[in-house]
Image (cartoon, rainbow, N blue to C red; front, top):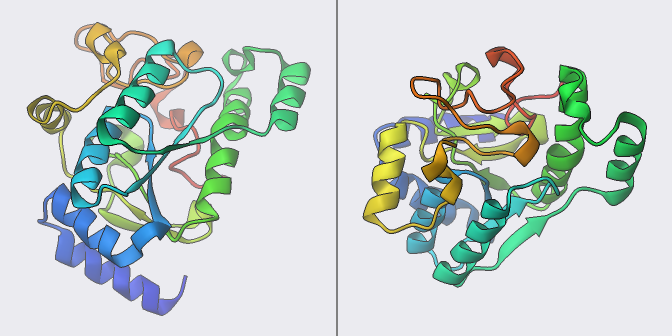
Length: 239
């Protein structure tokens, strides 16, 4: 990371600290043009889709199809595409890598160990993401600082060392779960119907379960693991 870029990001965080997500996205899209795109997966991300589309109807959005998603997830991709007249760029895992992994480890290898689960996430999510980010100067997420113990230090703008020093923009960093859903309802944003059926956080179908009343909103993600390991590799640097 150059000293110039580091200084720019530091200044941007100071400037945007008290700004709305709309103002943050206006800054980011003015700064990076068509070399910035949103990585869309969850409820937070559809809120960002709406925000970005209102800043620029030609905003770029991509999603990762792991091959293990719920039908409801595919449904909402098409509903978002239709509502915003937007070309959702769908990224797929490398077929050779996926086939080799399944042959060697089995279809549901992720239940056997944290290492196996991380291998599956790396093959189905991280590698396709890395391929897409190599074409960009910046990417946008729907991450919030209050989502998990692994995200409490989240900044609005970051240098993502996990992906070669690309700029990472988190416009909802200071929003709460309630803020997200208030925005979705008020703006009639399409969302995954599983959210109405006890799934506050949705990933691949075999790795996501309903959350019981009173549980943490990410308790249904990789529920057999400890909270400290519950990241797929998209938002942490590989060790």
